Length: 383
Ligand code: FAD
Ligand code: UDP
Image 1 (tube, helix red, strand yellow):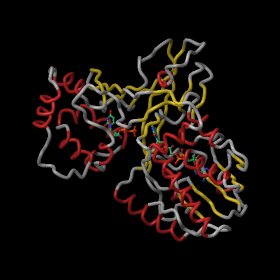
Image 2: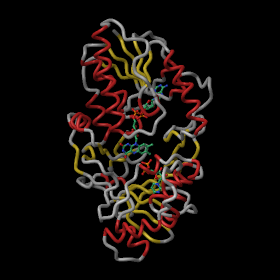
Image 3: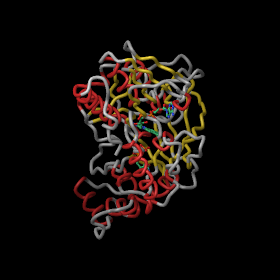
Image 4: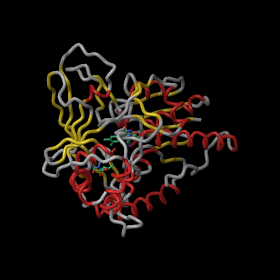
């Protein structure tokens, strides 16, 4: 059987390897000139630093299967993401923890006192927060919300926080101790040679033919089945309209030595036009570079136009409605399965993408046991 996998990010790579290991012929396409998808990393020629071309990527997961899987394809160095945030001329620690609370309110509270204090700030009348704003007000109260989340979120999403789902803020913890780890997962690390090397190693198996700089739209061959990890609306030639995305512009600059002393600083004030600055050598503290220069990126968020790279699915109510209609079309489409961040139009971290791709591999095995020469028309639900 011959399979086509569209997209050489984590989703596509995991599926392609699995099919090839089962002895199938796989054609893996990506329209970009490289593999790696949005997790792509490369050496910066001027500084020698490993840069994350499409924004900083830190691997974190609570999923043992995923953690065991990725470590088969490269060494991960322990790494804790400790983010700093600038608000109204002061630098704070993020996510909101005891240091942030004491710094912000000029207090010296312990965990219990701080919890009680934040309780007095939080809006207890909101029992089931429906929007980002309601979630913030019920969790941390108006002062911390205004200082750290209101302006940043308007810049990041181009919308009022009242129009955004509460789930976006629920990604972040609130802690009443001095733990400033941005993530709460038990496993966190950075691949020694960058994410691209991990994906290259996943694809290092006989039977996969990789075609970069090749769009699916230009392919005329027939395949037994297609695994499509590109945008779902694009597959259907936008016939029901375009799903909304935010895109990012990265402004590169260099400095001597150390520019900001840490990997990520968020700029929470709305008057500052960018959302954050990342200094990529701090993502690989084990590396030494022969050049003394450092490379940084200012990140600007805006609505994606037709030619822009789609980064963050917006998923407002009208988009969710359009997505449901596309999912209906996908269910009727014979011989194609939709996966990944773009194929399912969801805000997915790398570990979830890999976990879902591994679950898809389990489904492929079960389906091929029942029907060894053909996959069912529709068997992976993009919901
Ligand atoms: P992608 O990596 O997007 O791969 C899809 C590929 O398909 C692309 O390479 C694209 O070129 C190709 N393609 C699309 N359409 C076509 C077509 N028609 N023909 C040919 N090729 C096509 N996750 C974390 O776990 N930790 C982080 O720190 C983190 N940081 C992030 C920071 C930013 C700024 C963003 C936007 C995301 C971040 N993520 C992070 C999420 C992470 O990027 C995704 O989980 C991951 O990239 C999803 O992999 P994927 O294979 O589904 O999609
Ligand atoms: N956020 C914010 N201020 C910050 C960091 C995050 O307002 O300093 C908000 C913003 O809306 C963001 C959301 O919290 O989209 C989730 O943050 P996370 O760091 O998970 O976003 P990511 O950059 O990973 O998408």
